[in-house]
Length: 633
Ligand SMILES: Cc1ncc(C[n+]2csc(CCOP(=O)(O)OP(=O)(O)O)c2C)c(N)n1
Ligand SMILES: [Mg+2]
Image (tube, rainbow, N blue to C red; front, top):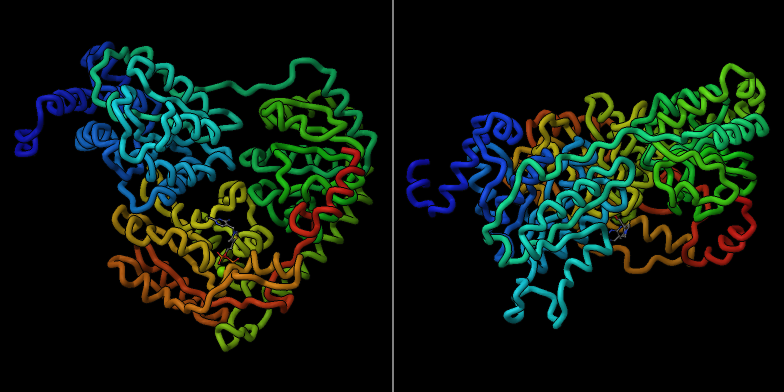
């Protein structure tokens, strides 16, 4: 430490002095309260930003530095050495954007992603689509061209135009170019409003020009914004609630669609469903909101869906949409409710609230609104669930059919596969075994894109929110394995299992190195069907021919992963028993492990979970759009 301090510049020494004061006081706010740190400081913009983020509780940074972020990096170095922040250096910006998204999503911590200017920033921004699509708040801090415009900066967008990175990132989320260090307070106020938004959080991009980072500025720490906290909101008057109560009274066939926004509102959704006798249909991202075995849980519905989930959607007269934004996957591209005549929509976001026609809008926080609705209905028999008995028993029959359908796949013997030249497990069988294993060891499940994801949300049998993270908003190949890095950063880590296809894994294999370096504890289960089967399947279903969705190169992923010291890699075998043994062997390693499981690809129906709904893609477009026109909602 002393050697390092001797070689430090005077400026870095001053940074260290402040960082020490904060650490000694036990945090920034305490240092301000006890007066050891004056509120008004003269610091560089870089240090001011680290301080401002600290005030919002941002302590974890996923970083790949470049000439666009060295000054910020120097402030971070000193703050990390004094124990105030943690920087996690990564090998790929898409990977680290995913890891940051997972840290915010699964662990509730707000991290920051730090890149250089240009290619690094663009890669991180691509990765941030996952945060944007799933409503997850993450700070993205990118180096940016100088504000003086003395000439082209290397890696800027080569046009004689101002602020292009800021404009680009503003299209993806919200963005602020720190053109002037004095603008930091405004930037961070907008930042917390975005990343800590109560129901529609997303990525916030801070663009840090090369020349403003080291600029010395005065900052008042007392007025830099804290993490935004907004009290729960709900409708004030009684009119809309009365309309909702009368709709519930008038219709017998009611489906609740619990979207990703319903995550965490488990008790309220259950209470409402039981009180009014509604069938509950889940979205890919909301499995677990109602326990799997609950008789009113119809499982997922949508373009992939399930026998029971899609039955409830197709036959409901009244839709109660809760925390859903009507993504094509979840509502069959707008044709999921052909018999619905009205909608009660519960959503904090006003635009999503009015997504469907013939809607009674109940804006606000989901538990608060549901509580108010129940209160408004009082003790009247308006919600008499006995009236919905016929509807619920028809739904229960379909749930049984779905369970039988699933069991046939879960118990299927290995299927002969052409690429593997031998019988291997069907993907549904293998996913079920791993999902059950995850439940047994209380691991969080992270799902990648492709058939792995679609089969996965059809298969998982969760009993609460928070056991599955399926990045169904963007379906970004490479998310799941990268997400394991979040467990290395979290204050309260949880063992994670990434369910990845061979295609998805090779998008972001960097986790093998970064996971070991930063101490990730988790397992990648790689379901290898030697192709991008989800797309091959779509091509076959639409045009009866697969095209360039596979290659001929066999990869020994056990050997590949074993090349990284610290990773334990295991062959998953070709039978259920071998796979279970492999999972145990992988779990016995206290660190990052990988299980390579060969899985079947082909048209044997036991090798897939089927699709039950419509989708406005390919040559289905004409049909779906014709049906869309005829919807009442
Ligand atoms: C980064 C990215 N590129 C392309 C796609 C389009 N896409 C969705 S699924 C998929 C194939 C996934 O293949 P794999 O991971 O092997 O899973 P499988 O379907 O074979 O089980 C592709 C190309 C995507 N979602 N993300
Ligand atoms: Mg594959």
